Image (cartoon, rainbow, N blue to C red; front, top):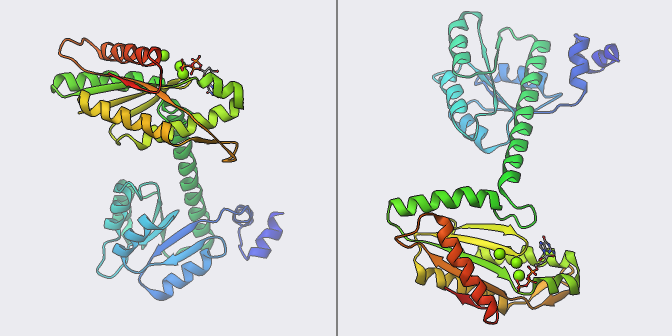
Length: 324
Ligand code: GH3
Ligand code: MG
Ligand code: MG
Ligand code: MG
């Protein structure tokens, strides 16, 4: 209960004590160059947070970027250093933008505190700083930071889910459709080369039928890794569905594209694929159709159509080959 928590923690305000007990521990960086002031704040906070003192504001900026800090408390009374400058640095850098910033100043610092809030400080404390108020405000800002982190993580993962194939981690068909159109337009506009290859694992149905669907999935993942390993960062690699993968190679003409395709084909054929947690190896081959942009092409669909036709011929003429 609240009164007991209040006694146990030595915090007068039972509400603050109860809140503190629920166990939100933050990493707090205290930017204060007066040792005794820093020690007093640190001892008040350190029952609930991991607090480190940094007297130098520029080192504080570096530490905030490198260490996993939730909140930075900045003294506005630093000797020969500008606490507001640190505040604006933290708020403008990608690495530190989400860290909570709290300013600490004297009553007559109100003007600078207002400016600090204007450049993005989240909260402030006026000296003499009340221990309960300190704990409550820091706690709120640590919670805000954690909430922002969770939000960003889930936003990022849902963005990834929208463009990535879950099994292989390659881009998905939807992403390919929009990106390929843009890549085609750019190559046509700037008269640059662009090549597309369509890859399809040979007799993949036999892998599934002989070794099971899970083994098939393992083969698909390994296949995707090998394709990725043979391509550059600027190439677009997407799983179009089933065991079919499309690779788009910007700035790449027919000869170079053929060479990449042949490298992939060999890399698949030459090393058997491990299944059942590496307890067994099976041979796999792939057929690849390659096509490049031509002057008369109206859209990327024209190139993909030629690559698809080439793939069909690769299958019809015996598989495990590249046809351009
Ligand atoms: P071909 O050499 O002519 O390409 O023969 P194939 O057997 O590879 O071609 P087909 O298109 O007949 O078979 C593809 C198989 O891929 C059928 C389907 O069950 C399987 N498949 C599609 N998606 C997945 C998947 O996500 N996981 C697994 N394990 N199998 C899949
Ligand atoms: Mg196939
Ligand atoms: Mg297929
Ligand atoms: Mg197809």
